Length: 198
Image (cartoon, rainbow, N blue to C red; front, side, top):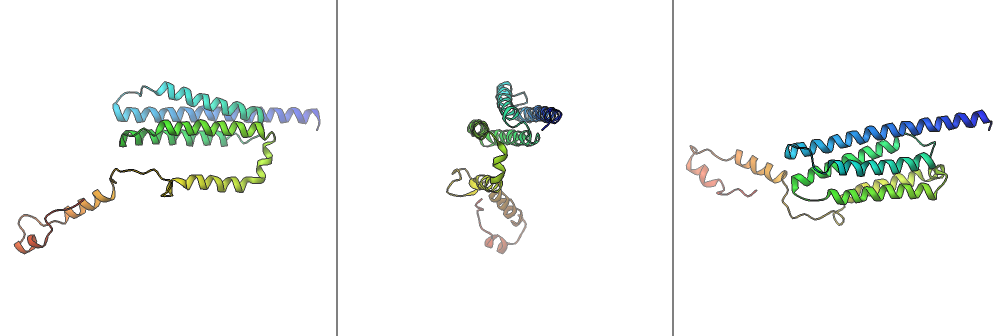
């Protein structure tokens, strides 16, 4: 390859890396806004952990980007920011569910995020030529689908003793809506069950 071709390839790689960085910053901004909106909806004020959460997500994004910039210079600049955005919004949704169900699952999910970034870095360090992974794209895709569907397996899903709030209450409301009025006949009152179990 000529010197001009090498220089052009280097410029293209830097341009893609800068695009990836810009998209990561945009994704981080969207995630922090979503996190702040969840806190505002819950308590009316910005959440106290906004800066800590933002700092942690920024550190993870910086680690992933610097590794990608150094070891995968020609990679697609959209994939990492997109994965980061989806993961961050998932963390925000878990936080919202924590508020609704009075649980604390968000910290555990954050640990999985840290592990995911660590695996990403280790893979790029061990596999110096990332194009080798293209041979296993179908295997990687199937593995991702398996991990995605694992929470739907009853043996692996977390058990909860809390009653479901959707179907039971809907059946209760529909049953109560069909109950006879106070002015109905005695026979109708006799045939209607005295209690409705929801």
